[in-house]
Amino acid sequence: MKRLLRGALAGGLATAPMSAVMMGATQLGLVGGMPPEKITAKFLNRGGIRRSEVQQDVLATLTHFGFGAAAGAAFGVVAPRRLIARVPLGMAYGAGIWGVSYMGWVPALGIMPPADRDRRDRQMVMLAGHLVYGTALALLVGARQEEASADR
Image 1 (tube, rainbow, N blue to C red):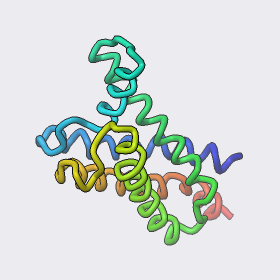
Image 2 (image 1 turned 180 degrees about the vertical axis):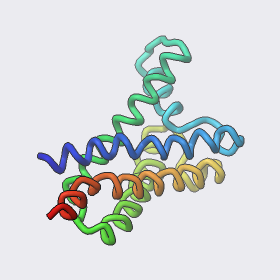
Image 3 (image 1 turned 180 degrees about the horizontal axis):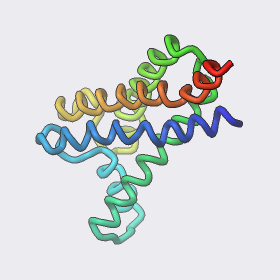
């Protein structure tokens, strides 16, 4: 249970640098619409839910961080204790989330085209963001474990 909670916290925190990559790319005009906003808008539209732009942005941010925390919880359970193994696994995990999302459930639900038919710049940024997420997740999920080991 401790690893699950530590993973959820690390996942939520790791979503911040990933989001920074996405926001920076948006400022440079590289991504067009942000996928968390597109996904949130599609679900709200399908549900016939009226909202302001601010409400939609807040909900997109909350769901993005919630998704990051949930993914982090799963990683926390399986994460190796040694950093040298955890970082490459975290990067692969982040890339896997990108693949399953942008080549899987997102296009399957008709939200966005598959990554190979979407804007190349957006998908490059999203893959980079997910690699940042996986790296940060791997570093954060084990930080406490390594502090405890160093104290012994």
